[in-house]
Length: 395
Image (cartoon, rainbow, N blue to C red; front, side, top):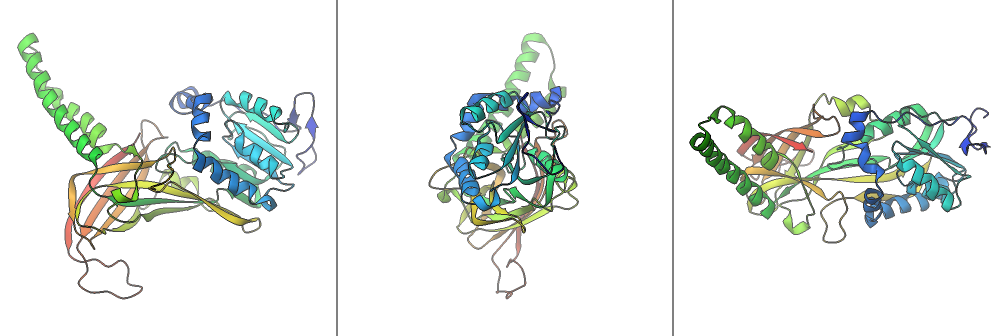
């Protein structure tokens, strides 16, 4: 195809000239991550998340000026739904890149909806596919639990650097990770009781092994307890919270601008992300919740007419398939209204699986301030009441 062109279709294979499939994921990454997305039931689960799907639908179809006669790349296309939305918003050509065998089904769905002349489905990782031209817009639903689990954002940034024109638009374009303190929750009590139960279980097991088989297992007791502590007390839990569960409002921990963010920023943060959460009611703070917003703003050269925000915040209304991630404090912070809970968090990849997360955290609980420090002097805080370091995991 001529340079910059993306609308010349080779009818022999249904592919745009110069667009070629890529390589499949390696076996380990496929087993750890990609294989789940090859099943229709999983695609259905995401599509039936009305808030998720409607947010993308509105973000795209309410802003046809961002898509009319544009070339679009859909990263991790799955069933092809975002590609179909972009085509119906007026895109001239859409490249739908899907690493799994779901690509074959996406192609059938595209053709069944009469869009085979606009949407080209490519199977393979976005790191290895070939496109005939740069694109005007990248669309992708890359967000995972706690925003960054699954590390799919890495592939979106690779696609941006490989294929996005200067001034091109990202959908979504920005994302914010929030933390919020939680009050008393049954799930935290259940986790603590389960942890205590496993300690008692070990004592019984060790005694039985010694009595029945004359075998001493005490040398691995610490390892067993560490395993169970990680599982019950340090691993985030999926939860759907409502405002009544919260001990204070959410505050931003991390703001991501997808035009400026680098892979190095994601993989190896040089400094912790920081957050200050105000406690708004008396009582124990038993943990904190993480959730995110994703905003569709377009770019400076291709701005949206109607900004749309997909939020996963605690809500009394519809919930999303992301829910929130809950992390417990064991024991809870004993807080009063007006206290300030400050934290520093490094979000890193787990060594055994780079798509999972490890959070290395520091927390400080301050009492209410004695006086208002005035505007521009930061969050108001009083005497230090408690502090601790914690490590959590998002599996």
